[in-house]
Image (cartoon, rainbow, N blue to C red; front, side, top):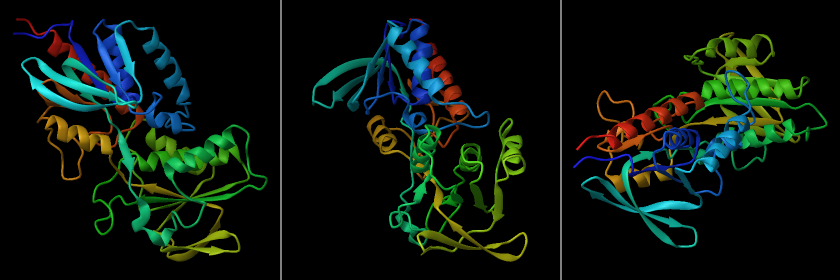
Length: 345
């Protein structure tokens, strides 16, 4: 028996990838149910003050897309809901969806797209940097909230010194993960440059081992941050952060210059390693999906988004990916779902 266009596709996760997959399926007339655990759509994009490499406002993506979904008759959005169970059937999956009131509804899905995003690594293992001990030591998403406040006009009276530490937990076999988290170099450059845009008299320092800018316009973006916005990049890994007279003292060796460096900062921003979300782990177990040693969902060989028959991934549940990549994967997963639903008898 074949699968038909009338069957629903289940999309799990309402971030950029999940929204894009839902939008494409819905506009093509395919019934689609989008399940999101929070009470809004947009995921991490809602937390961002800007984006790279073109300094775009993420809200300009989220708001129009959400309105499109609201107008699309083929789309059903279930907020504050989670997938609580599933059973494999001949033509897909029978899925149970539970809302925050405990009510459960059942859905027969001919295709499933998992777009459960990522989490940032817990930084408690890096006590030398003071995250959780000093209020102005923040991870990257926490600092996005500060940038949004500054963008809204709530700026500090005195221009601050902001220091960014890259690769905190990434490429660290001792206390973190051996892999590169891929997007940290670019969003750190974005944050450091945005500080200078919002507060021209502020100072931005980026402490790094190296930087990786492998996407279109990425190298130019980082160079413009360094050369045009005058963000200082210091090659070296800070050893420790110490409180000093209400500020944060950073000691480091500049390994290019071979000289010690001391910076007294008002904010320190830690680019924490990206890891699979709890939702990714739950869906991988529930659907019996293959994962890599770190918990990211693994696609089938030579398949960009297909995980197993009728199940596809999109976005950072497969590995860290920038917004454009998440949109591309969402579109690819939607196309794969359509192909499955269009199978002939």
